Image (cartoon, rainbow, N blue to C red; front, top):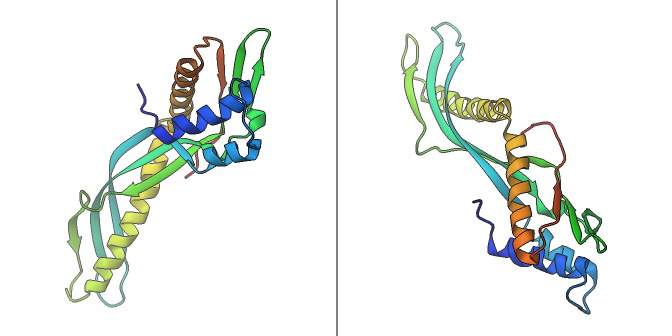
Length: 194
């Protein structure tokens, strides 16, 4: 089961209480939406990956510098709760159906684990005196590695997985909160871009 943060729980309780009319309150709806907006993101899937990144730099009068970097990191996807609005939660009292349209799933976080990543091989050319080139190549390898991780996650359909997981998590949560089995969660399709 997907873990849902306590803040998410209380934010959705406030919004549902207002939307479903089960709790009377003097607060304006915008106050309850603010509670959810402060939560920001619900990550529903995390891909941990490793990529091999070769980089090189041409140098004048000496042979090229080459670096082979092993990059380990992660890409997280999910939904941004700050995009959830009151109009996205609908209730049909006759059929006791609650319908929630989730925000578009997207890449929420991507990072290289610099402690687990390392330079596998470095060749500085004929004259081995340029340590700045080594740092530049490593920084370039980290940027390229991160881009490759996102590309790999997108090819593995991370957005569809994030949508499916968000749908299940939100449905389970709302069902347990309201004791209503007639909860319909709608996801929105989107392209993967990081």
